[in-house]
Length: 268
Image (cartoon, rainbow, N blue to C red; front, side):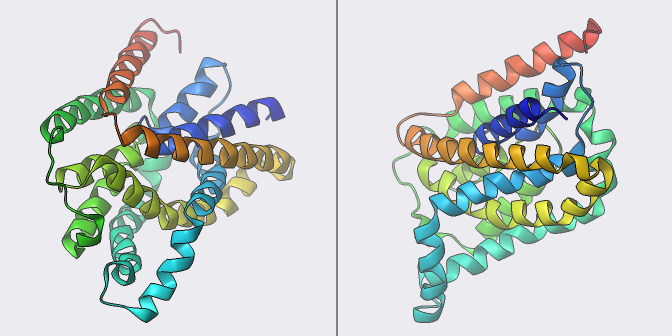
């Protein structure tokens, strides 16, 4: 893989991992547009470690404070949060292990991705309209075990390319009554174990399939994903404080329809 293309994939990965438009979909579509082979789910999972670095850096204060809170006040909001994040991670671990072959195989079809982009885009419009204008938002400190498990189930659905992990988790958190900014914060914190697990689990396969020659491409993709990922987190949290999800939903629907049109015309 050319290093310029690895850098491009990393930038796109970082930008789209946290914005609810599906990073997996974009990393699957981009090579097709350039007439290049699909780098595969393993490569995608490994460069996601760059976005893991981004979310660790952005939430560094939280991640330092939470373990201390677990010891100081285990029953308090901050003391319970790490356990709730762990519980919310269980569904995606189970689904990932059970559906690994499909995730790396037939679910990466461009037809599946186009359909997921459109369907989830429509769902986002409905949820955003339903939850907009709500003033009695639940505080994130009041999140419960059932809330965490429901958000975790939504995250596991995002194993289907095109769904978007951040989109699924933010929408579920909104349905549960939290504000957009709190929904994004919980979604990003929940992404830490999921991204770390996938990246570490797939690293061996990525190096085996791509070979030692791919190490520079993986390094470049991971580094650029970290930089663009940090910027996208900072921007999205600020954006959601005063904006809705409609723009992202429209983008998804248009992108999905354009992809279906390109496939019908045999351009891809």
